[in-house]
Image (cartoon, rainbow, N blue to C red):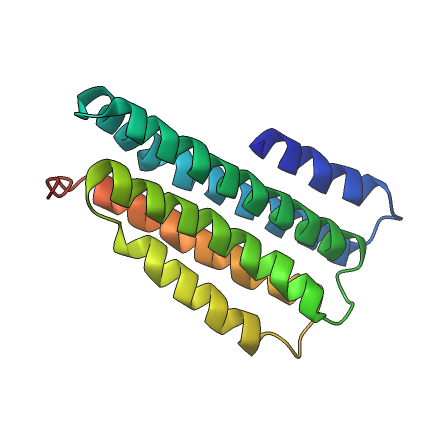
Length: 178
């Protein structure tokens, strides 16, 4: 699904005449997609796989994985559509619908990861909750600005969460609590 996000952003770029602002929006959208990949594969996937292997009830972990993966896919679709709008029309005013896509999509992605971590590992990384709160705050704060500002703000949050994961990867993971 992350690959489709890259294809969607690329198609949005080639579908309109070349402009530097659109190229910048493409770069920002791509950076956000890389951050999504980073958030998922840097730590979350390995922790989830380990939890499924060691869980007393692997079926319950798999069920949570299925539900949260569905939420992740919905979040990715919203992100792709938001990025597509920003790449096609970076200077347009940010509408409520756009802000729901640009900030709600990443928030849904992080929320799904938070739920899965909590169910599979017994704890939820603070980076996900802080990211969700930051996205909600920025959705309101960036309302008077353009679409490119919206995707830049939401991508910055995803990059910050990914960096936090990388730093946390060097630290031991908290132990599972019942």
